Length: 121
Image (cartoon, rainbow, N blue to C red; front, side, top):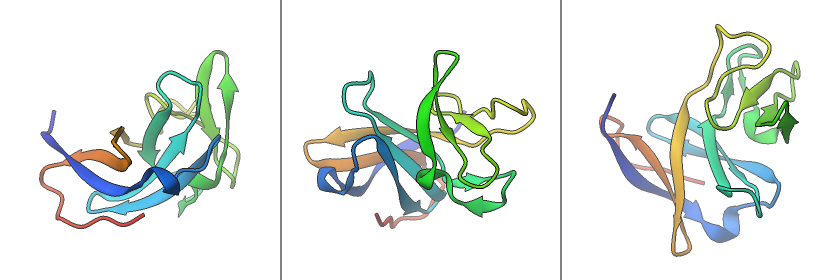
């Protein structure tokens, strides 16, 4: 398991309820989902869909599939778990997951320590 560090990637006001936003990190693009009323309210997975081969997952539709929160890729509609990153239709495919939190109004992601500095929402 690699060591991580919390990095500021945006503000509370950047979040869109019931939807995702893309943030660029030194570890690659990350899709952050804000689900008010869910526990937890924030989820972060890789933004890159390995089956569609494009950065699109933040634009996917969030829902529940057999009791698991998922996002449907906007390209070919595969479902990725918001908690594990696993593709529901192909167990050999997954996207990375990240710790995510609000520190006051600052949106922070846990990214590998080896990643370079600098993020943007």
